Image (cartoon, rainbow, N blue to C red; front, side, top):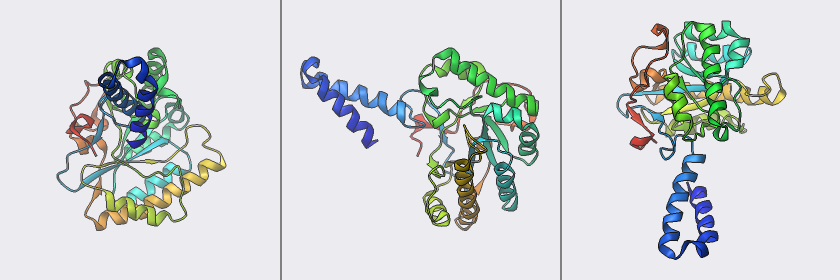
Length: 284
């Protein structure tokens, strides 16, 4: 947030001579702050509301995994989750779902849920024109439906950053936009995964949605993907016992936010669900 404010203040100062005084400059600063915050902060309510967390009651959180499925690392993630009796939500890239449909079906069969993470994971998704992002959303959902027989009900934007014009595409698709309230930062491996997991677990509160990864958006067979996802696994292996010691368990996002029946029983897109608490409600 401080980076956003600094950028907005700098821009306001540059524009000051043309804004006609302090009052206009202050209004410009406020407007720029809101727009920049919405553009760079995942789950910001200023451009498009999204689900960042569930209710703070109970003892549940939701672990979520982006950028899969991956033929090596997703099965390992599933094994770790099964060992601890945890359930999660996987936000799948459509082209990888098409490449590994059996793995998508395994995710669902083991009690997890799946959401769309676009078809190709364009890293510039926040600035794509409306037709292009709408196509990414549709094709990503169709790839998952081809594997499972059901269209997903959840969607996560690449990098978590949104713009106003994806709203109509999401409404047409009948999906709920999901961000996160906690991030494992597992794309930046640290020397001690267990210590990072303990720190993350210490910050978790009931209702948190945690972002992790089980795949890679560009080069799933590359050395960098292997390095990052090996780290992700190490974090997960330490995180789940730490959560248990704190009395927390992981459930799919739909269960956390009270969105109704799971994907296993749905036969098509539904109207967007009213989340228990969204970014407009001050999510953490």
